[in-house]
Amino acid sequence: MPSALSERLQEVTGAISDAAATAGRDPRALTTIVVTKFHPASFVRELYELGVRDFGESRHQEAQPKIATVRDLTATWHFVGQVQTKKARQIRAYADVIHSVDRISLVSALEGEPVRRAFVQVNLTDDPGRGGVAPENLLALAEHVASAPGLELLGLMAVAPIEGEPRHHFARVRELSERLCEVIPTASYLSIGMSGDYRDAILEGATHLRIGTAITGKRPGPG
Ligand SMILES: *Cc1c(COP(=O)(O)O)cnc(C)c1O
Image (cartoon, rainbow, N blue to C red; front, top):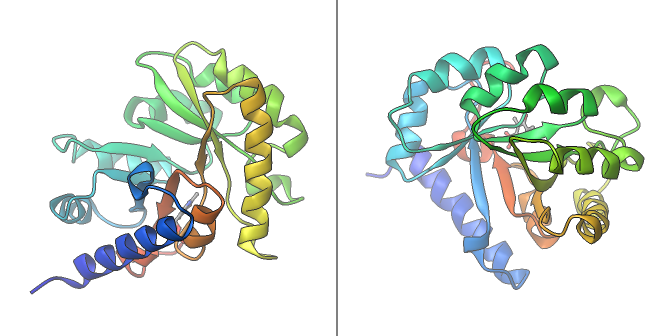
């Protein structure tokens, strides 16, 4: 009998394919990252058994020991939370992709070997505490990341604000992405879309979906 987890995974995978079809896009061009924060390493193994290869974490103090215990899996780890400058070197040690580069002062802290892929996070709210660079400073930061040794700029990441239609916010990210691509054509990837809004994100060009609860079910801890 299929587990509840495998049923949710299948359901979301199906919904992603449907949204891609609606958007006239190839679902194979979409990377679904399952965000496993607050779930134990054993849960990561369960997801791996079900075919998941891309995993996301948002808190360094939780991610570091967890990922260390599943190093035997051939998986890609995505760090999606805010990065403290003093933890940057430790995070780049285990995270293949860092989705949340949001300030120039963080860039030099993230340089090193091997090359890590990175997204610049853009803040769509007026609250600087939300993480992400203000849209007006986006290009300068992106150029910094693109020229940093040891970082490969993939594109933009954003979280839709609670207020307003997600689709409207994602359309804005798409516009910012188009402007960025005029300067850095290779930075065309878009990390947008979570459990509640991934369909809208796919319609606006998402390439990386960061999905937690819709697949994992309720998180065990706060969050
Ligand atoms: C937790 C988290 C997600 C996943 O959230 P869900 O709503 O559970 O899908 C995605 N992105 C970031 C940055 C997160 O912290």
